[in-house]
Image (cartoon, rainbow over all chains, first blue to last red; front, side):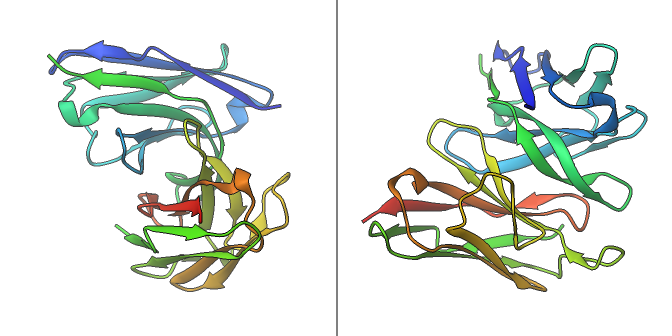
Length: 124
Length: 113
């Protein structure tokens, strides 16, 4: 059974940083691209980032490009999202997702399995 | 970016009745090299993470009840719940991944009438 468990959320001040983690089990982690999708309070789903299976390729939404960095440690079956220069509009539940089918170069994927999410609140 | 527009924003359906949700893409979501529509549907129940229901526009994910079905082509797609059950109360999202970046519809809230 695929299991994804996010951690690292919390309250952070505007301009601050936060690092999210996602522990994975139940599948061949290094063989799958992984993604982050967020959901602001009362809002819909927004794709944030995708990392290829090897970690060599990363893709970001324009809203976070240059501020967020996603990486992975395949030896520990863990996905990361380093978030810098945080803004109020980054407040959301952040979900880790195992990518399914992907198109083109691999940056646009479906989301086959989801974690339960971790909440990030950016506020002073 | 491909804009995904769902309709209606919400609907209330009696138990056992049919619920139909539409999703329109601003351009075709046919992924040429696979000749498939890269359009998925997700269900998000209150307080829970989303769950993949339908992939490639019309294929049910393993474990999804057969009252859920997807159809459509090109830019227009439909999710149908043939006989609404109480446990189907949720927000449903369509998502395209034929073109970067992947984008979601705004969601359709399904309630019991």
